[in-house]
Amino acid sequence: MWQRALLSLLFVLMLTGCAVSPEPIARVPAFEGDAIPVVAEVDVLAATEAMRAAVLEEIAGGSARSRFEALNRFIIDPDGLGFHYDLWRTSTAEQAFVDRRGNCVAFSNLYIALAREIGLEAYYQEARTMPDWEERGDAIVMGFHVNVAVRIDGVTYTVDVDDQVAERVTNLRIVSDDRGAAHFYNNHAAEGLLEDELPVAYAYASHALTLAPDTSFIWSNLGLVLARNGQPDDAILAFEQAIALDSSNLSAMNNLAGLLRDRGELARADELDAHVLARRRSDPFYWWLLGKRSLAAGNTEQAVAHFERAVERRPEDARLRRALTEARVANGELVPQDLVNEQAFAIPDGEQ
Image (tube, rainbow, N blue to C red; front, side, top):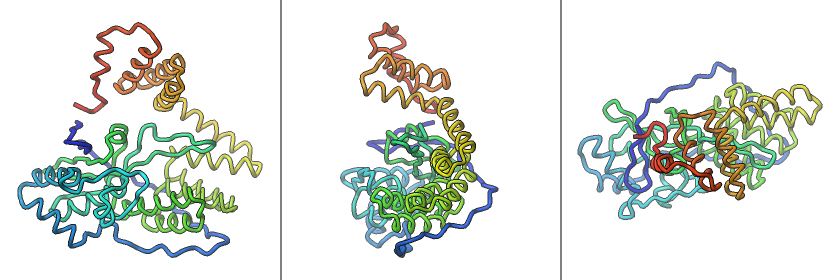
């Protein structure tokens, strides 16, 4: 059951589970070349006196449910913190409180810190976004997301700062504080990669792995760092570890295939490429993504074909059916009005 709150916060009533990997954890390969900067250990959930005073002044006593609702208003309302989503700002709870903005990691750090100050059971929660991968040039980037789980009277609620992402999350699960903190360091590793600061990226990725060594996407990022640093053998080890921990990690498979092809292991590279391609074609959200791109390019006929394939693979998903109907209307097709009305007000799976 999905429950929308005021403004941009989204709450989700759900069940969560745990994942346990039986795979052995590989040694983190050393970085060759430039000196590695020292990554400062920070408590991403530390609350300052100013944070405590602010939240306790706004929320004094009451039931867990009333405190939960008051905290949501306090964080998002302009008269409170007025928190704003900012994709490129990864920060600790303390910094997010000062900035009043941040991405999903910063928001989760801030929310959990404040929630615990007022006696709520709050935890990090990981999710995959759908589609859970996207092509960027020759690379495949996996979609991961972190938000907050709050437990009240045996019910688990999810709090998410971004409505658009929250409607596309799947496979939610509560994770430890260490794994939540690993997202903070992994994000900084990704920023280092984007800026081509490889020693910085390596330092943050390797530190993230000290907190969460069984995290596939961090191994995948480490593999990218090592590959760009001219360490293909070490990069292969990292990508193989990523795949061992998560057999659905298409990003690691795609990157591993490229490295294997470069060193002449064509049969194995072809096998990985075939697996990635098969996964794409079986994934309804792959066709959904292609449909969105076709619509953006003005090719409505092609968009309809892509959305039809998406619906064939996941007919129960109202979001996909709605996208197909909208594409058909854009393509000038005659669509029964009752179907248009149904799709216009369709509610995504699990929502009521």
